Length: 413
Image (cartoon, rainbow, N blue to C red; front, side):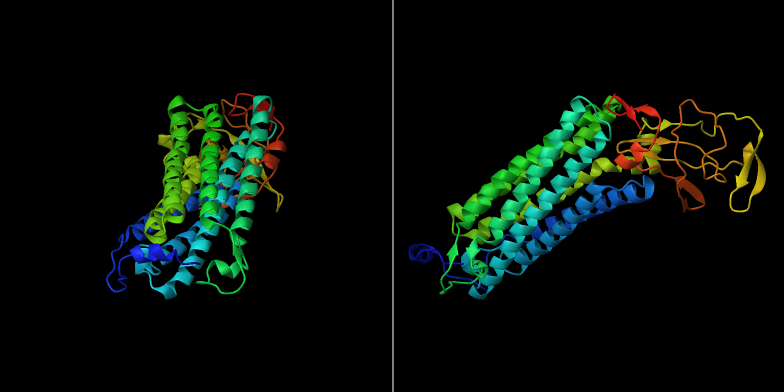
């Protein structure tokens, strides 16, 4: 880290280390609020995938990694602003803080790039998963576009990380104050500004790509627009990224007061990254809402009749496989539980018998063809049983019947 030219130093006012002018604690408050929201929404997404739909995927792994980098970035932001002068003028920052402040700034750049990239990768993979197996025609081309987008974002992240880490040779010359040993450093302002411009483009890419896909889902117009509105929150992410880029230019290129003009960079980065987490996770929460507040989602389709419909009072028998015994029950003894078959944004429920986890042997009144499934395990939850059929590509390809996908084409499930 180098000091500015002598004429710039001469123009600065006298340092005030005791009671300096600051920008306040807004970054700390905003970071805590948005980080909490992002963390809670991400946990709800994981709960939905692991406990309700039982269909975790690669996108969930990516979003967990993104959340870990985001939390680390938020900690760095709070330390830089509250402890090492990130909310005051550069001339009011003690000289012995500058080295640590530079280290925190480098860590912030790395963590921001990682959290932003993994969030966008999770969102794009989520969209790829929506297409499912056996997509044809337009959706095959759309799948290719998503794969290209994923590779593009990953490559840009890798390139920026390498440039950011090795922008000084040796690396520690970046944070050493006025190094006297031989060294060479790139223009860090130009590097970060260029990376910010590219990040705006990839933010827009991750926001725009899902919209045509969501529009073609077989959902009622009201719900389709609602889901698109969640994705469109990415526009706020784009705005925050644009504002952050403006202040990156002001703090690292147009001015030497990098801490004062760098403060809005921290603020907008916190909003941008945590809103990105929320936008990437919120669309996956539809099965959670359908589970706890089913009346909010009128498009939930029921594969079997509900309690209110009459049933024939007949005997049926089942075989206990472990003991070879036969049991007889009346239909009134059936215990209802729900079977969730989730293809991401659409959820169906089905009534089955608690005492026959195999799902074979009995016909149930239904207006729809049921999915033929292999024997799978059951999760016991609060005296009920949830039979889960994962919505992953592998499980979908193992099913035998023909069905209509959410995209109005037919493929083998």
